[in-house]
Image (cartoon, rainbow, N blue to C red; front, side, top):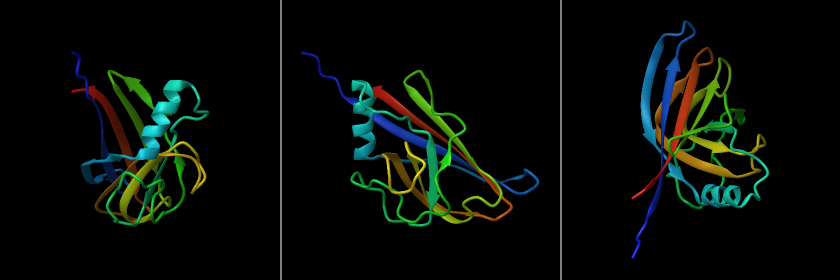
Length: 152
């Protein structure tokens, strides 16, 4: 008998830099792949999804991540296009987004990946909540998000 279990996990790296490019803060955080994200993955496998995950957003609501969530709970700014629409290698997909000076500033405690640029539309793949990252108006923040699929 074959007994196979698939595991989908994610981790993001947040790097905050000041206006001169000096690293102020760097950290790694785990995330939750939400139900709508799992549905999206299945629709891509069946060839029925019409868009890719290509947008990221950050917010100010530290409500715990839950599988049934479909959007961030407290946007700071809007969704921005990722620097790539996901790079797939060795059972992983990596997304990177840069929030430049004046973009999504404030006390950031949540982040998500989406397949639509408009707030409250499309599918959310992942959501994570973390300790506050204080992004000033002149700061730049990059998030690199890696999603890994493994057979356990």
